[in-house]
Length: 98
Image (cartoon, rainbow, N blue to C red; front, side, top):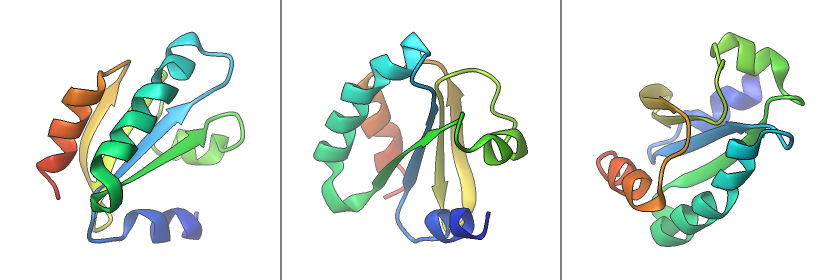
């Protein structure tokens, strides 16, 4: 958990994608997130978190639906969404926090 705190306590937005390999909607988000990361460059970070390997963290954040997308900045949750999103929408939302 302390590593998680270090990941999110930065002054640029961090988009977390909680996913599993067996969830179709989760895997459909992978290319979208690659596009988002490429478009934003070093203005933001995109981190994929496998719920099966990080169950304690997923439970602590009450991740129920997949994929769950959360944006943090300076250790504070700024935005959260369960379900798929398109790249342009995500880029627009993240840019609000850059």
